[in-house]
Structure formats: C-alpha cells, structure tokens
Image (cartoon, rainbow over all chains, first blue to last red; front, side, top):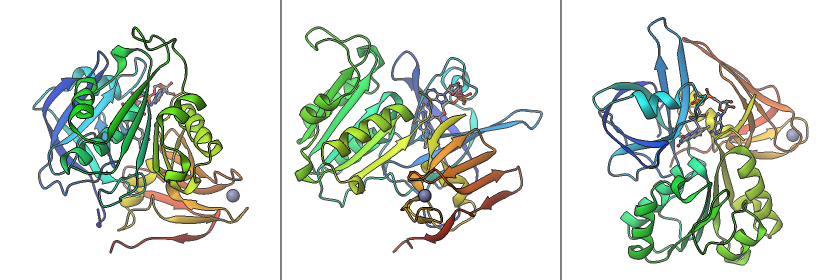
Length: 241
Length: 86
Ligand SMILES: Cc1cc2nc3c(=O)[nH]c(=O)nc-3n(C[C@H](O)[C@H](O)[C@H](O)COP(=O)(O)OP(=O)(O)OC[C@H]3O[C@@H](n4cnc5c(N)ncnc54)[C@H](O)[C@@H]3O)c2cc1C
Ligand SMILES: [Zn+2]
C-alpha cells in the first residue's frame, strides 16, 4: 500500500458462481501484501497480437485470507465475459494492486456504518462486512442492497448466515423488477427505503455507496437530502447505467 | 462514454506516485472546490482518462496511458495535498 505498485502475475486457484451471471475468482498472488476492505485491483488481459484491455475489480474478500474478486458478466462486454465464462482454475492473469485508500473501511473506526449497494456494487461492501465479522467488530452495520430479482443477489446465503451470527449486522433488500412473496411491489431505491433501513443522520454513520453511476448518484443525493454530512458519504462508481 | 470516478485512477496513479492518490485532496483552479481525487468525475474509455471537478465540471487532470508511459497533466488543479502513510 505504501509503495509504487506494478503488474504481477496471479494464478486463478478456484472459481465459483454467486448467481447465474456473477462468478467469484480466488486468486493466488505470490507475496500479496494484503488489502483493506473497499480496495480494488486492476486486471489486464493481453491478446497474442499485443492488444490489451484493463478493468478494475473490487476485492470481495477480507484480509488476512485469500484474494477474491466477483465479476458480473455484461453480455456485450469485452473483459467480464472472459472472466466469468472462459477463465479456469490454473489459468494466469495479470493484475495490479491493491488500489485505493479513500473508499475503504478501517476496522479501527468506531462509527456506525451504512452500506448501500446497487448490483455488483455489493462486492467491496461485502469485503467490509466480512472484515467486520472476522474481527468480531461491534460497529453497527446496515446494508441496503438493490437487486433486480431475488436470483440476482450475490452472497445471499452468507449474508443470511451473517445476519444470524454477526451481532449488529442488518441487511435489507430492495427489488427493482421482481420481489419475493411478502416483500411488496418492486421499486427502485428511494427516500423511504433509505430512511427506514439506514441510520438517522444524527448517529453520524459513515456511508459507503457503490454501484452503477446513476444508482450511486441517486442514493448519495437522498443521503444528503436526509441530512447526512457529505463528508461522511463515500462513493464508488462502477460505470454503466 | 461511460462515467466512473477518481477511484478508478488509483492504479495508474500508484504507478507514478509512491502513495495512494485517491485520498489526495485537490483544489480546483476554477471554482476553488476541494475534494478527494476519488470524487473526481471520470470518463472512460482508457487510454485517455479525464477527471473533472464534481462542483464546476472543469477538467482537473488528464491521464493517458501507453504500454510504456503514463502522461499526467494537472492543469486544472492549483494544489494537491497528499496524505503520507503514518
Ligand atoms: C473502481 C471500480 C471497481 C469495480 N469493481 C467491479 C466488481 O467488483 N465487479 C464487477 O463486475 N465490475 C466491477 N467494476 C466494473 C468493471 O471494471 C468493468 O467496467 C465491467 O466488468 C465491464 O467491463 P467489460 O469489459 O465486460 O465491458 P465493456 O466492454 O467495458 O462495456 C460493455 C458495455 O457495458 C457498459 N458497461 C460498462 N461497465 C458497466 C457496468 N459496471 N454496469 C453496467 N454497464 C456497464 C458499457 O457502457 C458498454 O455499453 C468496477 C469498476 C470500477 C471503476
Ligand atoms: Zn471546480
């Protein structure tokens, strides 16, 4: 984290599907220095003719432990379909990291935390939840996770288990296309959802918002309108809609 | 073009600087707004990344990557304040 970083070669040690279109890759990197929840890596793929493409992927795992990323396949994408559908354990990819020191959660911070995720924006927030759980952190954590349908929720089983086992962790889902029985009609994230399932501004929570650019903008605007201090709102935009 | 933010500049900037730059604080030469580099509005695709002030949308920095070099111009910032790792 302190030194200049450069590209290194990682081996995919295993892979698993989180949903029908999101896959986690476990990466083996010799001498990985460790990382903070919220950091990402840059992945570089190079074709035989020398053409190369570079993309960022958030780190999903906590440290100490393994280095894992979760990639959401975009049907018309250049890099993500390769990482979800082509790469196999034993294959090597180039990566650089860990990257970023601003959109990170430090377990030494006592403040309550509000996490707001849109789609694959849950990945760096999951690293924070895992880090807190592993350290038996006491900071009250709330996650508001917007997904299209219940089938699109990554880490669903683990989140259910952690809500049961990690004291002070709450998870609320917002369904935008299809809601399960009893969860009301599908809708986009709105003031009511953040107001009822977030923390009141006077608790002075640290807020982390991550997802597609439009989603992040909406959620951050709502937080400010509800009275949250903009200095406590950290955002990361994945691009897309 | 797709909008992301200054978090995505972290990797290229760490190849130049020996410190994390997403947490560095810029001062906009146009409107004097200050904020973390992570909050810049950035447009893809690479190799040319343009970071704009989230307050007045003036260009703060441009970063162009080639296989062997990174070109960084910081014409829109009067100042960069870089936290040192303690
Ligand atoms: C800091 C950072 C962290 C990221 N972390 C993750 C992560 O943990 N998991 C993950 O899956 N992705 C993550 N992303 C997004 C990722 O870097 C790529 O943009 C994404 O995988 C698409 O790449 P591609 O080459 O498949 O698609 P491209 O070939 O680049 O784009 C194909 C089409 O999809 C659109 N598009 C591009 N990105 C998105 C997007 N994110 N959502 C919707 N539409 C999009 C483009 O406008 C284009 O029309 C992150 C991005 C940033 C900046
Ligand atoms: Zn400005």
